[in-house]
Length: 224
Ligand code: AP5
Image 1 (cartoon, protein in one colour):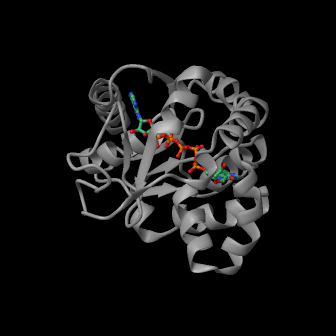
Image 2 (tube, rainbow, N blue to C red):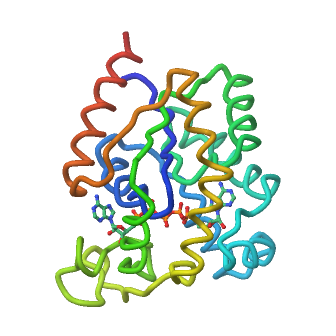
């Protein structure tokens, strides 16, 4: 089968993590979510976590140098040799350039940038109701995607909590950061012919079906 080197792009709360959870099983892709990696580092109180925490708490991006190293080690790993799914990276033009140059040097290229479109007001509604499991970061929404038992993860039985950066004032700031620093990447990938848009306001199952069908086609094209 053709190699799938994929990135998920979209505002906070677009449903990137929700879709990634489903897609990684469909296509057996190693999945690297920068937010999850950074939150784990904060929890472990590693050097990376200590450096990243203050930026994350405010809803700012951590510096490119910090995150690029972390993600490129994973892209270069043996498990990602036949493809990968990145969630939350790249988020700045500098990060996009690092990824592009690194792939080029290794004779690889990005297959597609999967953009999940959701308006700002929907982002605010979603993040205020999001609950995340403490063990593996599985996502729920109290209204749109509730767990079977309140406060308990369906998949691993762990406790569901609200993320610190999902407070309303921090969500607004994260949206501003997205519009200023990450949105320009949409044009960048559009010009490269790599952008695929998905309507993130559809129910999660429909968004998933649409992305999955697009990826199946791309995978066949890569094979030809
Ligand atoms: P990160 O964890 O990546 O946060 P984010 O991009 O803001 O994305 P979210 O995880 O908030 O949202 P999502 O799109 O995954 O949505 P979800 O599926 O959860 O980053 C956190 C921080 O880390 C950043 O602020 C920054 O400090 C730092 N960082 C990370 N990467 C970095 C980088 N590259 N450079 C520098 N700094 C970096 O869904 C949201 C909610 O909506 C859930 O409740 C879900 O159940 C619900 N939902 C999902 N889909 C639907 C649907 N279709 N309909 C209705 N509800 C839905």
